[in-house]
Amino acid sequence: MRYQISAPSTVKALIQLPASKSISNRALILNALASGNTPPDNLSDCDDTFVMIRALTQMPETIDIMAAGTAMRFLTAYLSISSGTHLITGTQRMQQRPIQILVNALRELGANIEYAGQEGYPPLRIQGTKLTGNTLSLPGNVSSQYISALLMIAPLLPEGLRLNLTGTVISRPYINLTLQLMKDFGANADWISTQAIQIMPQPYKPVPYFIESDWSAASYWYQMAALAPNAELELTGLFKHSYQGDSRGADLFTKLGIETVYTPNGVRLRKTDSRANRLEEDLAGIPDLAQTFAVTCCLLGVQFKFTGLQTLRIKETDRISALKVELRKLGYILRDEEDSILYWDGECCQPEAVPVIKTYEDHRMAMAFAPAALRFPNLQIDEPQVVTKSYPAYWQHLSQAGFSIREDI
Image (cartoon, rainbow, N blue to C red):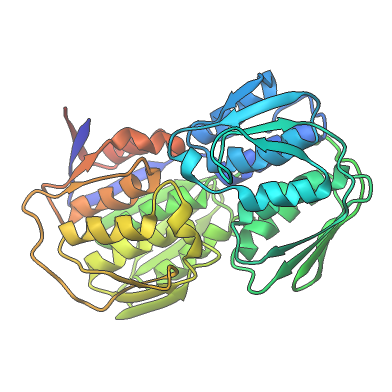
């Protein structure tokens, strides 16, 4: 399936954003660890949250989490301390995404985990057992989901856990999000130095919990506001003092001409005349916004250098390579260095007359490139249904904002 996107001259809408996927999936695990009888309120309706709910409520012998990376990492730790034996698997791409760092860490604590396929990758066969270790060391530049998975089960370990992180800690905002949610559910967990976290052995308490809207999803509306000649956009459910690291996107967009006005219901976006000529940012704490900012900067003619992108190679796709290939179709030649740096110095080529953007089974490729229809009237998005992974109503909301979406088989 393929969508052809046509953009309006004015992007105007009141958008009810989806709930945060990051918070939803953490809150579901914490609620389960607390033996809560009532699920968190306002859960995300995306695929990743659906598979988490299904796994936690049904606990079948074989758990298929499809393409949900958070579910794979979080459930691997959760199943390690849960009764029974389970096989956890996912899509073909998921079976190519490494998980050995997390498995090794859990084994060091005493977990019983076997690889059911290729060494170092899902699927995994996990027999729940009592974990006895109390100290771990991990490189700080690994995926924050590995770290979060270990942190969330730590209060239930007999001696708790001291987690030492070596080197540069690249995803501190996501770790802080996990720690804050853990404390909301009654855990005693915090940084004891810039490189170490201590979690005390203390059971969680079930609490009523409301999930805020998703700042990652909001980024695509900021993008549209920046690219559109005129924009009148209000986004509901966003908090100024958010737990989500991706709320930093609002600050970065001020450099691209979009001001955030906070309201009792969320935010209103306002265009300004202020725009940077070049953007140099460390995106280690907000890697999910890399696609949004790469596409936006190119289309605005704003040269950029983004660092801290180590985790992009092992996401739903190799996002660095995908961005380079697809932005070339629009006439922009990007370069990368050291598997962690992506930059554009203004180098251009002839754009394709009818660009068809490949999405690589990656929801963020579809959502970050669709706003490019504001500059490319013939833009097409391949396999647009991938947005269900995090934002099922995305295309419906685009239509609501005045975009025309035509399906081509």
